[in-house]
Length: 381
Image 1 (cartoon, rainbow, N blue to C red):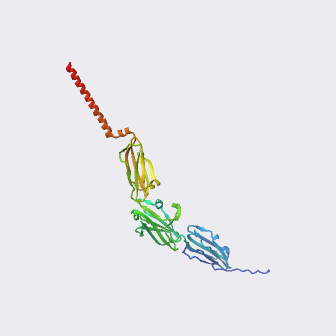
Image 2: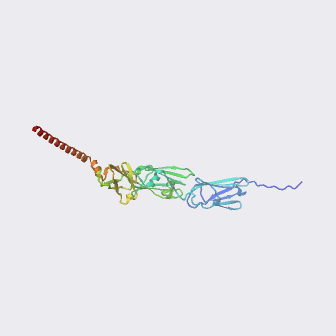
Image 3: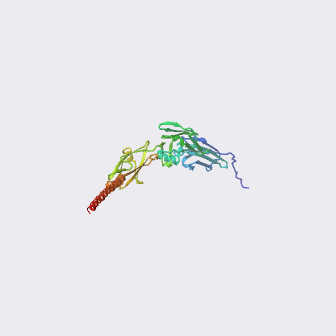
């Protein structure tokens, strides 16, 4: 018989070993984040290594450019470079190793990278309130605070005309929390409109501390405002309408001129927005901007000539949208003396009556004179 060649085989019932260091499971991290994965097995093969990194928001991430690999004889050490900027998220890191015998081990950790702290979102009303800076009818203020981690401390305050007030949860505002394990946390604050009933200048501040020990104040990254910068939620509650005073203009006034000038003084306790001038129900001019600020709300307005009474109406608005009650004047502006005479009904009808009386007297005298003449003629006959 031919010589028998000896065969050999290995029996391997031991699972591979995987150790993940550098980042703790379920930890919140704002400093260096550089996990290290150590893989080892007697019958190790690099082909049996699978590594995945998945972010809650970012999804699955290609780690090839993030790691360096070093062989250590019966395994491999995979070292992550420090997670870079714009990497805030909640991550699940999973390492899987299958050895040549088919034994398999899988290890996973979940951790957060949280260097930026909280960001904020505003509803449409609050975004508009920040843009205009004024309101005459306060509504609930709704702000969302979004953070990778759980907030461990929240404080909401506002200052009114420089006086700071700390709001009480459940009394002045409510908080709704969304997001469980492995999810971003969303806190919705609803600050009640009753906090802003009084007129004045308000500034709202939100302060929080998260599990990664980040402290956040109201720093808005808000797409609705189309800009990214540190902002404060400041606005003015103004429920008082502007005041108007007019000189050199009288209701039912008659001015024998080709044009008549009068002065309008408009004042507001906060900030004027614009003044509308209507002539005979048609918007003639809107005064705003420099027209209101050059002479501190003092306007010189000209009414042109017209052979009939004109209705002059003025309405002023402040920045909060408060309007004045419409101020109306009926005026006659014309250099035509006949129009003035005709429009002055007492004078016109008085003259007519005078003419009628004079005419009557003349007729009476003529008739009486004729009668006397007729009597003399009759006596002669």
